[in-house]
Length: 373
Image 1 (cartoon, rainbow, N blue to C red):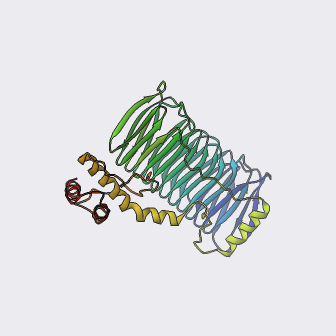
Image 2: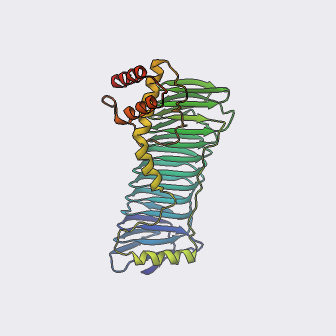
Image 3: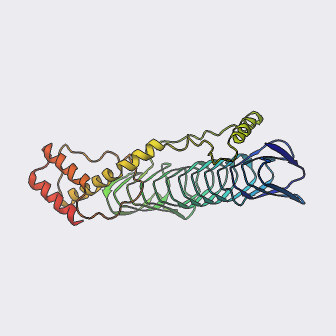
């Protein structure tokens, strides 16, 4: 690896990096770039605008005041420190930003981690999961393919999530707030929050806000809380839980060090991986075992929800057989409409019959209802 230094730089435009990009803030006034001399690397200083293109991974150290634009990174992109201005257009792999004021991200092919954001977040598209650990402004997430976790003093929230959404929100200030998820939604807020709610769920809908406590299946609820005002629209393909009484499990962000010693160690690791497509470690972010277990449980959860709905149609309580497990498991995607009775549903009804929770006649009735819906 070799180093090159530039002085009097006001802006950096990273046009294309075919490997991974690592960029940090430091106290020096210069911009330093560490690159692989065996691969093509172009750096041009045009009156304070530094343009970069590299065929392999690079490491950049720059003052926090520099405006940075990342046009394309084929691999992963990791940003350490709090830059005053940072825009990301396209990252093919994973993106991690430890700190920022306002952040704009157009496309991330993999997963996205946002640590502490002391301003607004605008993310257009993430193919995988997104975790935003602390957001102190607006949160706009246009399309998240996987799961979303966001916590903060959100003045406004708008997101469209393919998987599950977990939102820990301190306040709602703007008139329109929308969350749509193909899987489950869990959202907690501060007590005595004034807002107008419209909530819809494909499975169980659980509302515990103020004096209201409702737990129903497959319906839409419209209610005004407190003096009303800001509108909150929630739509889940699976289960939906909204509460101001319970604390949802909070996740902690663990930023990696980026001092000179840590940077030298990172340089050594990058040099050892030159020419490869090795990803940098995001193990604390991705709990693969949990994700796999959630996928395995998907059909069982959906079968539970359909049997619950069938029970409701029969208008009968079944003593001692409790499906209501809190739905802490997640559903990766909204299930397609089933044709007839699934094997999971047959097994559950057989178990209820064997445990003498239902009669043979009631079992036949349940199977008939499930076959028709």
